[in-house]
Image 1: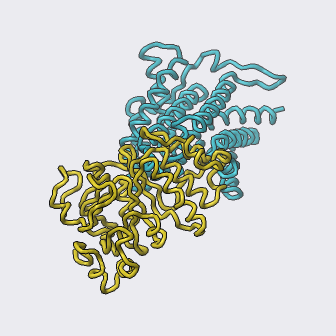
Image 2: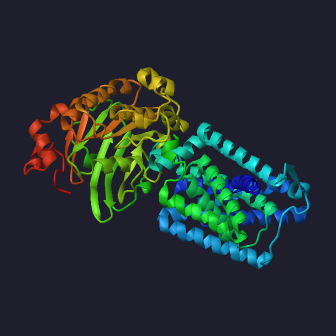
Image 3: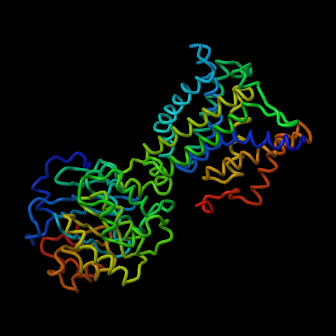
Length: 290
Length: 278
């Protein structure tokens, strides 16, 4: 029964990983930006939520309503200024700039919030509560996060396939010059894609703060790595691939933890490496999906 | 020659007399719709265009011909805004557009069908047209109208463009440009990689397109094709103008000389033309 439990926990935590991964995948797919600051953005969102809750005394869940749109706006602005400037130079410059952003964010957080770990909403019934099926205990929080992740991916899928801007995002990802000739300002479209990426990772960051603990370095030592692994396992450019990748990563980690608690992270990365070797295009490749 | 195009004021008479050959009486003469003045474009150190001027009048089919590497596509891409000129200017309706990005030029009515079709490959046929129509100007062309002209396209609108033949893809690319309601439609090497019979069929659509009030500026490597459809031809060689005029007014020998840069190209070109001199 412990194995079934491990698999269920792994699947559910996979939803959280997918939330981390979809923005990373989107930014790479659309503007070829490998955003090394992606995980740090999640942490920034988490600390913003902590700050907002402490300062204006709102219920924990309301912090999502404030922080997620705020981060989306920030995403648009960062893309139109810093990242676009780097993209106009070269791909390597862009990589360096996101790395620099990551360093700046981490040290800024250390400066203001110290290296202490913090959680969000500790003591809430949603965070601590659980229900049991037979001998298996399932936390409400992970179920909710998984449901939100699926809803976000469904929404994103609908937006990308049906809406005007979704269509433009796909067109610009295919050929930004041809999109310009059709009258589309690809810089603006890039900004919208970045807003979505920042918004989703903000959502994931706050959720992670509730599920676990945040520290200024969580962004690079945990979140970014898991997001990368989920994207690579699932297949780049595929939304449902990121969910599958997150789930596979989550299950591998939980099974590893069952064998020995210190093998949790290792097991995840063994699967990650195995996929890279055996199926480098990921479990769901973009071509196969369409 | 060094001033940037964006600084150009009203069209100066000096520029007009300098570059336009004597043979006036062009279709719909009056003010040119599109004008290029003394355009110089570099690819790095390489001078791809060296002082090109041209005037396209409303309703014309203006064909730019020339061998590989003559600078034809560079000229068209610079007019569309994809290359920044080193010097010279591009004017639409007498107003400079040289400083505008391609998407702003499209909004003014300069829309290009790029070389190699460049369709959005992960989008369906209909979605390709929808992207073209997103920032469309007011005008006669709609997606519905494109479907009326090409009935097969309506039936296959849900397909990805990769499933279409080369000729069909080229037609979708033209449709994507048309739904933006251009004033000047730029066509870059339509015939590239297509069978002659398909090329004939695509060029056969031109009269229908022109009937809606468009003006066409095209680049074509196939000279006989260009001479068939064009009301005015302009031959480039190594970034310079070697011949310009109406197809009826130029002889095959003149075209050949201008195209290949034979010794008598300068003397064969029309009076008033600079030929090889710069």
